[in-house]
Image (cartoon, rainbow, N blue to C red; front, side, top):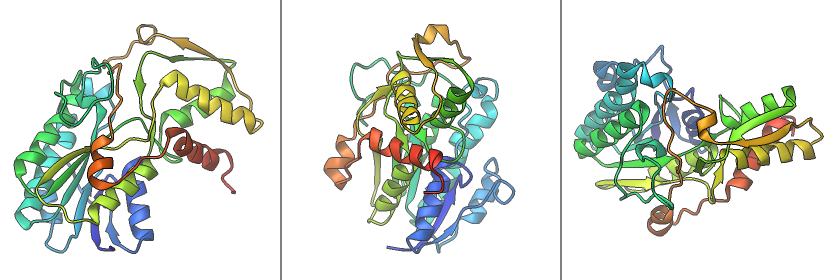
Length: 291
């Protein structure tokens, strides 16, 4: 049902997809940019939350995983303090808050898909700050959904698929890690899920996982991208698998980012489509924009 929706992070992949889809569905959408809403100011956040919002969808996040190790204060301000301010202001008015979180709240040591009830154990500042944001949303005790997702891809913004298309056209050899596994997921599918949930009565609080169906390594995903690019007549490189140890980064990544979607299927009837179909749609938009 159309309503009046406040969307944060509108310049990002998920926030932009939510704002676009909500407007297309007839909702009145306000997606303030950084110049209009300072996410490091609790006062600014409290001031923008009024009684007329049908729902608040918080997609804003500090997502520079490596840089977060040296910008801890900013990461916590955006990923923990801002969600707390939104949650408290929303709870005071009984406004449903849908908050987007991440697979990085887990350490990746589990053998299998993570459920919502598995213990969290973030490896770095990004994950720690996002987990703190989850706790803040729950502690505010208003109507809310925390939606964890992973490996986000879209036709806009910076992401792995767009990077692979670019470097694949530039290089003869591309090396990609093959010992990190997750669930490639499109921003459009996340947006549809968030709006589906927002249109339903939200009472109490709930943590859910949403990712596209199936799993892959980064190497698998790169291979899929290059396979589609080759079929489209584009130059593709030789793809070489490497271990994470050969590609050191300031922040440690979870080796296993696979999220179970059993709960959202069983409770809400939301069935994610295969990641190959979803990522294929993104690649079609990137490689055949006129279509």
